[in-house]
Structures are given as C-alpha cells and as structure tokens.
Image (tube, rainbow, N blue to C red; front, side, top):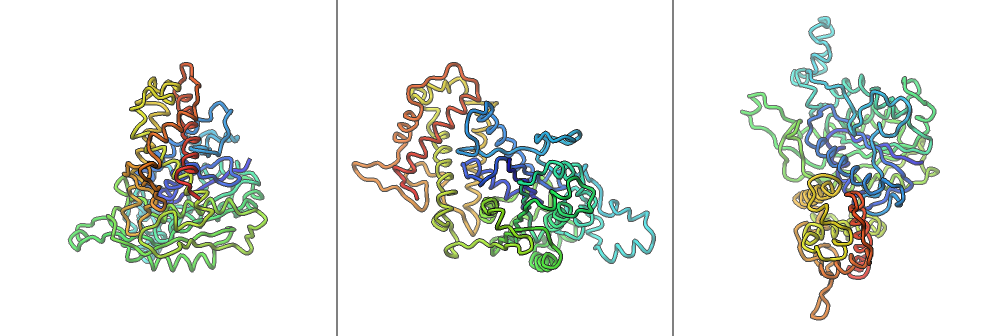
Length: 494
C-alpha cells in the first residue's frame, strides 16, 4: 500500500497543507497514493495558521471516515475520497505514547532561547561565543512563539528535537513503496531551519532511528517557498517599547544564504519544487501564537499541486544523484489567475473537481434545506439530520463555511486566485473562465437543472431510517454524480 508522509514545517507549511486539504475535499486525486499522513512541525502550538489547519484536517478526516467506514465504496475518488490519517492511526507496533494528532510534539517548549542553551550556567567563554553568534533579541526570544524568522536559532533547537517519538515511529512505519514530502519556507525561521534537519535525519544511517536501509531508499520530494509576501514594519516607538516583530526586509538575504547552503550541503531529495512571487501590500506583523493567521495565497494552492506532480513521477525517473528542480510558470504575468492559466492536464485533474465541489457547496448552502419535498431530501430522510449541530453533516456544513472563507481570501491578494466566484448566486457565472451562455429558450445551468440531476441520481430509492453517516453518503454520492453531469452537459468544461 503506497502512502505519502508530508512534513509541513512552520506557518507556511500549514497554509500549503490547508490548500491541499481543500483540493482533496474537491476530489483531486493523488496518483498511486492510498493514504496521506500529514505532520505539522511547529513549536508554536498556538500558531493560528497551524491550529486552523489542524481543525480542518480533523473535520476532513471525520467526513471521510463517515463516508467510507463500511469499506464498500471506492476510495480516492470523488469528494473527500483521499484517505488522511495521523501517524498514531497507522497501528504500527510501538505506537504506545504517541499522541493521536496531526502535530509533531515538541514537548511544550515554553522557555527563552537563552534558558534553552543554559546560558547562565555556561562558562564565560561559552557565553561570549553565544553573544557573538546570537543577538540579544534572539537570546531572549521565547521559543513557544517559534523562531520568528531566525533559522540560526531554529537549527540549534530543532537539532535536539528531530529524533522525537514521531520521527522514530515514522521511521519504523516506512515501507519501500512509500514516499516522503517536505513543505517549508526558505525565508522564515521554523521552515528554513527544520527542513534540512528533517531530511538529514530521514537519510543519515548513523542517526539512531529504525530501518536505515528503508530510510535511505524511500523517494523524497520538497516544496520550498521563496518570499511571496512582506510584513508591516513597526514604528520607531513600537521598536523602542520592545514589540515583537519579524523584519521582512531580511527575507531576500536569508533566501540567498539558504539557497547557497542547499546547493552545497542538502542531499537526499529526488525532486525540489521552488515557488515565489513579488510581494504585494504588507501583511500584519504577527510573529506567532493565535494572531499569526495569514490569508490564503495563490502560491499555497500552486504549492499543493507540487505534491500531486511529485507523486505522478514514476520511481524509475527519480534519481537522487541527479535531482530534478521544478518551478511553476503561469501562461501570463497577470494579477488575476483563473483556471485558464493552468495546463490542459491541470484543468482536467484540478479545475473540474473544484468546479464540481463549488457547485456542491453553493447548492447545499443556498437551496437544499428549502427542498424538503424533493426525492433527494425525502428519500435520504435528510430531515432527520439537517440542519445538524453535531456529527458528519455538521462537519460538512462547517467545512463548506471554511471553504468559502478560503476562496474569498484567495481573491484579495494582489496576485488573486479568482477562478471561482464565492458569492455568485447564478450557477451560470460561478466559473470565471467559462460563463454558460443563456437565452430566451435556454436558461443554462439553473438550480432547477441541478435539482433534476440530483433527483435522477437517487432515483426512486428510499433509505430506511439512516444514521447520519449513511445520510451523508447518500448526499455526497448524489452530488458526485449530478455535478459531474452538469459540468459535462451545461458547462461543457474541458
């Protein structure tokens, strides 16, 4: 069984994983992948980007498990088809003591870097060396905020933690046909420091981790995010008052330094993916905790596509001695990006599932509860479960809310992803690059048309007192069928 282990490092890693989860919910397929095991790596456990992504992963998993719990339905196809799971649920021997979580456990670091290094107990010579290597701000920084754009601090701290029980359990769980993928920024602190250390521990046979031969052989890819945003800089008064901030003026310098290091020292990756963009208007400068909750960005969506591309590469073409380096190019340098900027293959593999999912979300939120006499609603006994406050249908409702927020966020950057219109009520106008033509005798794709396809999808079947999981499956299967038909017949999308 082929599996993909994803290390999403830092806030940028969490945001790319958020976009990947949206694409998988829409039904984007990952080639030859039965199971995805995402692990978020960030010592800032309160980081808003991380907690939001963890909540989304949990919601996705509950929906997927409710849909496929009886094992009678094909996985990896349709909405929420890809299986996501935590490390602990792999049920490999030695799972004892491992938290059932999508987050790498750093053991609750809540001390300053100075205390972590035992600065006050060190010799005069050692303190002098630390003072030479690290600024006073870095030494006094609280580690529970992450590394705040300081990879030199992160590399020291993470080096002593990367062999935690999560890494040991992952190494023990690996099979020869699995793959590993890393996501990180190159201009921050946690990602820039954590990525090369995680690669080293995966590959190094001298590291005290299980299965060195398997670790050495398993194919690995990595997405490295170059600067694509900048942060507001504090005023002189705020600096004087000691306000925490990240200096985004150093992003380019850090990027050059890291790229130079990767070129000389980074080994063990078969495929490297690089993404970056010109920064737009500065974002709020929140160095950590719940306030670090950046809006979704086009770069993160394109970054998620790198994972699909990596899994689509045959093992015979992955050569660590001659690694492949990839970049993503749009058809034009336009401020607004829609599906027309994608390749024909991506329009088929990514755009179509997203359009179907968008129709699903809009119809569910706009019309479903108003159609209690329709075969879809009556036959599935949906009145017993909707509106839902708990259970898988409540998770689906909340997921759609988060999806629409994500889509709106993508549309406010200077480089906007505006392929789908989140607030458009007319199904004919929801897809930016393909408006459905209408006329006096042809109304195009209306809610009546979609309702008829949904009712055809369920036919005359009636469920007998279904539980919430069966009602969810009834609903999702109908929308899988109906939206595929209208994308072909009405949108005629290719």
